[in-house]
Image (cartoon, rainbow, N blue to C red):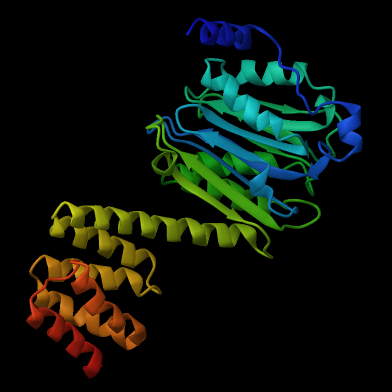
Length: 339
């Protein structure tokens, strides 16, 4: 514990030297990755959720630019990107440094700061951004301390891109994921990357950590290579929303709350009408809840669309996931033969 306190004190008080920021490694191409892009980091003051979103004309931008951790903060590191800003930025904020202080320390230890563009926001909404003087034009950032976000971009077709992102973020409705997507869409509409578009990503994390990242990460989605990455990213966000309702429905079934399960499955189906998996499990929930009359028409539509799901019914009976009453299984299987 004594060593931990000393380490925290050291991190709080000293600039941080970036291990990748030396001429030898830059010559080997380990640091100078030209991920020119536009991005946004933000915190929702109402929920405390933290997010980061990005698009670039660069393959798999989500693997290097966006970083976020529940209860800690978010980082976007871009231009001639050094991913160390993401790792160390979160480390510093985790031990108590504010986002502005963490960014200041990392820049002080980086000989390549003039070609970096970085934004950070912490769990309290303190936000800062840096656009190096050698970032390729059009390049700049807009920090909104009151609304707790920052937009930043470089190698853009014009200088209206990051202000357009900020305006869209302020004017959009919905949760933080919706705000982030609106900002990306506004950037593209304003002209976007002068080279075009290729990949995009979004991460949204909870206000506080539960110690279970798979729960804390509300959204963690990437489009690696696409002609329309933001369009595809929005589709994936909606799909994620559907499966969040599915997961809630499954949990309700586990707890025997079939009314809640039906509500969650219905919400999921409304967001993903093309998937048969959602109505299938909704029908299973109804059958388990004693509403076989309501379940049978749903099973019938599922089997009509994709007959392969019929084979799953006896397996679910064997696994205890459908009533063991032979009459129930027989009635469900009958729907597969009458569609």
